[in-house]
Length: 442
Image (cartoon, rainbow, N blue to C red; front, side):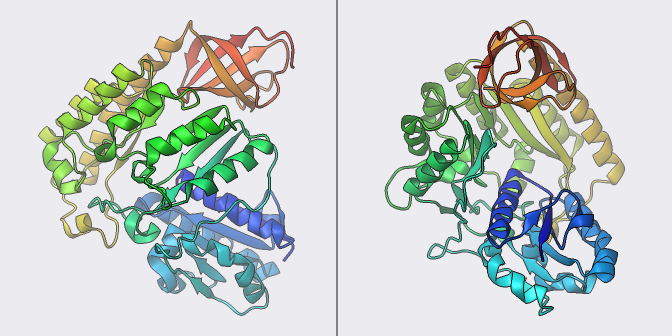
């Protein structure tokens, strides 16, 4: 095998896993290509949080079957679906050469020669534990990434009734603070100006070598000063502490954005979901954040159609959404996940009702997002330049501190990684458009 192609589904954690797999493959002498048609090895990195991305990933694997028959392309299914299904996948896709869970990425160098020599299928789906956390260290410096993903912890101990993550990502385990700081320093030396700290619930971070929790980690990275901006995702509302609010408010490099999954605005449904907070507590925490950090962007996740969700429950969600006035949200129809507590409940909300509620919710969310963007129009904001705009070849693209995508014009091309002042002129769709008066590219 000389070339590889990776297709990634799902969250930023999956994006990060794909980056790590790519680095391991490059170190083994393989070269990445832009199309699976050019690849000797195809890896499909999967997500099983909802049924739709799971089905899309399985379909994606099937599309490469003829390529394997015609030219011997090796096909690997990785990620959460691999962890969830294990060797059961072979009954649906017997042509797979390997099935690799998220905690088996480090085994890739050993797995490659086995599948290249036709000694598959290889099944590698062991989960981490506290003694063997299976974090994949940064393998090599990669220049050109302005924003870099950094795993600080993984796994989840919350066991929300609808969520498969604890079963496919294991229990919570945190990386040593020193390892995190070392990786961030290396990324900064390679040109990264921003890091996004990743974890299923970053609020649960606990340095295994000290008593430093997540706010202390943010303080250590801010004090290190290697990068200009610090972001993080995802935060569980029940674990959101006053200390974290103080850290976001007081640390210069920590950006004014937090992602808090609401999931539902009904206390009855939240209890069925095992979320550990009430709708009132959620609203109070967002209000505390807005008081401490004026202008903070609050984004969220919401599920409609959870088992037994009544119209009154749904209206409770709409009420909380209006009250918090989220800047952006990801919203989904409930789909049962195998092995979860909610899967034992009757999926009794009809597809039509789920679709109607989702459409109603998304109409409100789009209105709130438009209002949020409109409030930024006319303001001048610092934008970290990422490169050329994907919408307009004559414009540029970057992000504000509150994680808004901003496209802008400039008489002088600003180099990626530079922070420039942009006057926001208008909102188009989900992005801001503005003007930069930069007179020098330096």
